[in-house]
Length: 76
Image (cartoon, rainbow, N blue to C red; front, top):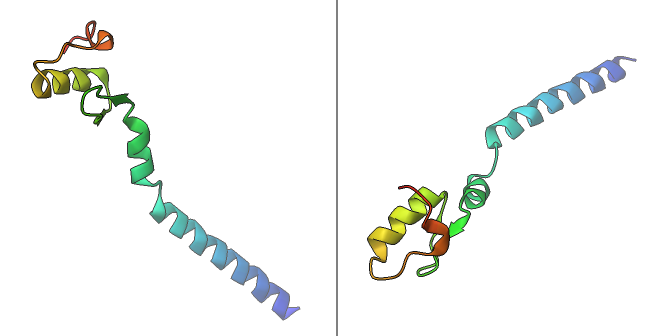
């Protein structure tokens, strides 16, 4: 029966170790960052996280191009 107790302790130790490794790894930053970039510039195809940033980008990088319809109501 001594081996049974050692087996249980070994399983608990392994579970704790796996939990620590999983916690350290966290979420994948590249995937979460890609999900946050939902607006795509119609001219240069760069991605922005929100419409305010998109409007600022468009006004500074593409001043000669007409403003897209979705950005006309956005307050920068």
